[in-house]
Length: 315
Image (spheres, rainbow, N blue to C red):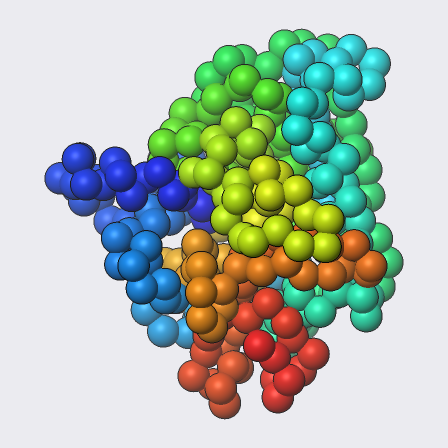
């Protein structure tokens, strides 16, 4: 689902009728779902959003998570990533490569969600980041369309030789590239598209997050343990989209609530109290993250958590 920007709240104040014209979580033309901007209510009294617990929609979940990243365009560099002023590629790789095993008690909250037949969201036993690729054969468009992003995801999946609902292809746009709506409406979104054979390719549109500044998480959490405050949005947004891919890889028929919100949407931009965004440890390194929705929190009441050891040990 699309993770909307903090700045969008200001837009809502001056263009409320335009934003309210369509349901906040209606499916867009390309199949992903929109996420509400951070409202004035969230700004004053941080709280979860949406309607109740997540409910199963009949589709798949990701039972064996594997992540692939494509650095799209020659703007990143020609033979290696050299144009990355915020170090987003290295931080992103560090984050995902540590999301496994007993050293990750963050994404474990999503393993409670299952698909038809009972298989649950998988928790990798080892590094789930299976590959990165610099696709410098062409220059990424300055304002890529949704169809261009989908095509690049398919191109990357072909490069890696993968498809199916257990993968996540992250399309990283370079610094200065602004997909339509980035910075003003969303920070990132995930969707699914077919390859030439009709197989699913779940993918994430991941713009150059620090280009959006505080609108997409820069400085959102009090930085500790060596975390660079400016770069916090890279992992806040990245973790949001990864968790939503785990629980809803086909973007709408997995685990969503009655309002259409996914696990990350319900907990986005909470700044204090239960579910507040935080600095967490993943296998010995520290990262900024937002919380994720846990249906079994509080005996089934549900809430946002950043730590999950079991249904009876989470916060």
